[in-house]
Length: 374
Image (cartoon, rainbow, N blue to C red; front, top):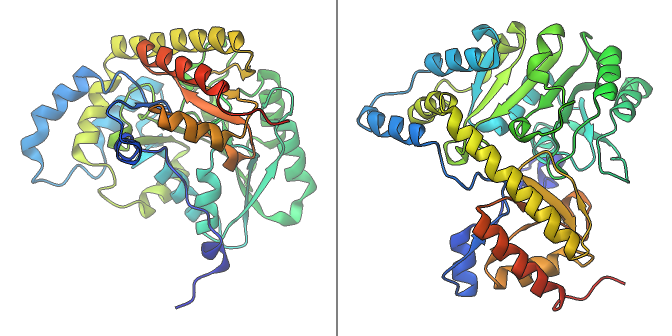
């Protein structure tokens, strides 16, 4: 049985190395994982309590509409409930949106070194992926270049533009003025959707940041992706949300599986959105951890890119795969990002402070064991 060239050439998404695998492979008892941008606090205590209450309901199918969670999201982000969709993580939402609004041979447009799931989902749907370069000096997404590319390539059939803000793996934001100009040029068009992926907005400290969830209602073609995996500590539950105009939700709900979000994820999501103190503690842990990493990386003379997410991207000055293996042997899992085109950069998630300190100790030792690239 033949498959398409797009599937044959598809490079699957590679998740962070699991702790258990690292322990088995290197015979370790203690492993610190700072590779997958997970919340080191674990889920909200309120979410855990809510799950326990619903454990004996698991012989029933979940609410296919996710009514209670949709109402809570509507209240949280001040959007009409009719403009809220739920997904099995934001990855499922990305996949479904591409399947709904693109046909084989169409294109999506994003930046180089943007979240790799856009490319994986598009290629699986026989949709082409077009990219524009990041700004070399600060690794920020160039929205002007993206808009220019759209207008200069009218035959490319670009149906969707994905803007991760903040971006993973760089942790950088798009500029406010640049965003306004981008929306003037591309907002309210009927031939392209603008998808803002806002997985990390709760960690942003830049006061000028313009959150798409607060302005998307002004545009008929702006969509927003949200996730419960980061600041809400629910990565294992696989829960994402889509904020979009009603016509998008009508199509989305036709295509998604009827029970795509399980019952425990729904009740945990409702409880997590009510736990303000947990979110504040999650932010505190990340902001203190980032400031610690900045100080220590500067001491080690390793260049880093200031981050508005819960991780930092830094330059090891070495082949990052060699660095990765060296650190694995020390019981530290970080994320090399060579698949994004960065040969010497590593992404390091903020953990608990004791984990952060052990990570720096391992990195400092690594510097004497792995040779710099000449």
